[in-house]
Image (cartoon, rainbow, N blue to C red; front, side, top):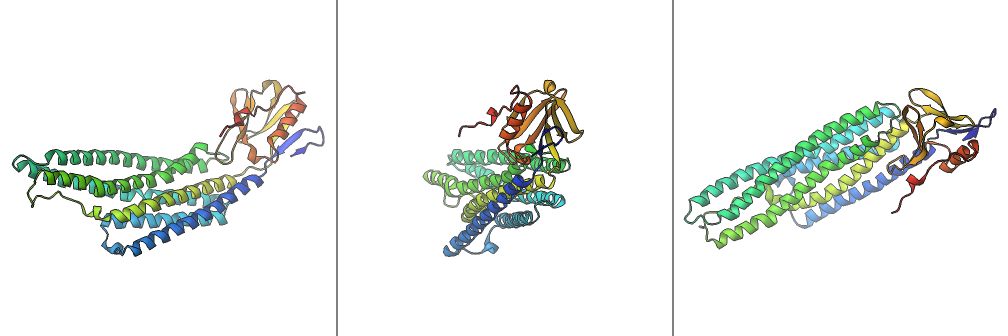
Length: 374
């Protein structure tokens, strides 16, 4: 902040210091989450070894692929975090790292698709078993197995729809993120929110599938088997199962790891998008306030003079994401001009004082939108 020596106009300049500090803080948080991720992996390996369970070579193929996808996604997320911590303001690096992180998240959709296929195959097997029961005298247990079959079919249909939505959303998010990074000085509020949702979406979907697999294996099938037993079904008539259901324990441990991985990837996404903002930080004067009005730094038109009578509302706009709340100044016939307070070398109160001084207290900044009750 400075005063013009000729007419003592107030000038606010762009200053990356505060934003840089916030981005470095995100990097430190990411390192802590990386530590938690490592601890979680060690704990899972320890639990598995103590239970005396066999290694991955004995797991069902879908379980093996799910674990491999989780591992690759973790490695890519760790690479993104470490690279962004060392190269905070390199635009091309930010772009590559952001795409890498989204691709890592997309990998978690592969085991979801395979689980959907396994569910469909299991439903077909149960459907054949219903035919066997219907051929028995009195059709014992048909209602219970039909209920199981309906649940499997509905679950498969719902998962298929959600999976399709997830794939479409991931593709749209990647395209939107690239468009944002190619738009000069865009803050990308919605784009950055979409990125965070995108890195969480596949992890949550796979987590739900893990919970469903455990539910079917340890609750649903045993209950149906009990009902079949009560109905005195012949000994050789056994409710079919699926090989993947035997891996319920590793899916339980994987579910816990997915929560930790999702948290870490979300942290990496915030660091990456924050670094992208820093790499495109504007230079020079942002705002000039004098007796005639204000001069705004327009990204397309350059410096633009707006007189006091023509200025609309001058207010703060609440933003929870980095870089936080904005200063918004209305302009005639154009979109309102906005700049994050964090981008400036002055505090909101200093700008407010300058506006009051040059308008004889006729104008000020309305900061009430920034008031929040937690």
